[in-house]
Length: 386
Ligand SMILES: Cc1cc2nc3c(=O)[nH]c(=O)nc-3n(C[C@H](O)[C@H](O)[C@H](O)COP(=O)(O)OP(=O)(O)OC[C@H]3O[C@@H](n4cnc5c(N)ncnc54)[C@H](O)[C@@H]3O)c2cc1C
Image 1 (cartoon, rainbow, N blue to C red):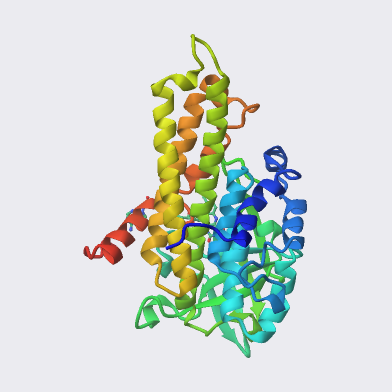
Image 2: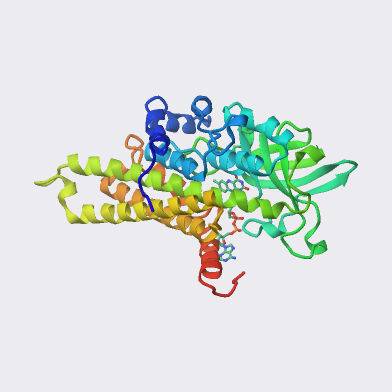
């Protein structure tokens, strides 16, 4: 196995640092605090060709894999500027269309999405069916050649700034299906469709994206909005969920490194006794442990991404990478806060701002307990627990 990145992969990994020369963490925070998205940065990424990394060149992409997309996310995290819209867009919308869309759907959605001219959201969570997606109630009822959509979705990141969404709805109710994973359909939703309403949910995280409750009241969908086959959407979903876990791992290993870099430079400069605080083992060791765990998580993320690109089942590795990266990033940011003393909590140093976002990753997009149950069952052969 070769651990050396190619020249192209190195360029992708380093793109975040380059992007941050114009759109740095201060810009990221300023936009977040004003409740605005990173519009200019997103467009720049599209123009530079980084949003369609996994899409064929004929649709405006680069023809690469999730490995490269994860490197992009990780590199942006290293610079403190990763965005959740990279999950909802390239991982959860663009890639499934590139893989499972009809030629018409690819031609319609991909070029603008790759160019950064459009953005997308991902919609599965519902108020009464969080972790248990089998129980979602949002229903698309047959209506002539198309469907009428009714229901609601919760915690939808970037619903306000998305042009489209990949929506998971039931087209057959749970009590009518043989297997509970049957009866789901994936829809490519136009967010300007009549009948869609949304209200923001106030979240205690400093981030440029906002979460929404989204309501559907007789929203008309055509056959052209179905991705894949009616009632067979759940099978396709795994092509989005493993990439999502891999990318969230990349965001966390990146943010963890960003926090540790800050902590190291602070610890080397801050002197309140004889030596800089970084000379004390009590300060060094938590940072060294966090650094070790971040790099281990990054390795597992790269392995999961490589497996996905080879067409090898990477469910176990993706979940392990997601778990390890979230836990490592929480530890890294906590150690960085402690190293900064009181300054760990000031707006000026911006360290505490990182904590809610990395802590989110223990819960979303998939919570730690379900990840561990998946590993217990599917990797280790323990009985199913839920
Ligand atoms: C900031 C943010 C952004 C989000 N963005 C999106 C988005 O863009 N699109 C989208 O569809 N969703 C999104 N979500 C939703 C997110 O994926 C869910 O919040 C998450 O999956 C957990 O679901 P829940 O909140 O309903 O918790 P619940 O399902 O109610 O679970 C609560 C807790 O119970 C425990 N638990 C649940 N089931 C089990 C079990 N079987 N075994 C052991 N423990 C269990 C876990 O600890 C879990 O955290 C977002 C959420 C947040 C907070």
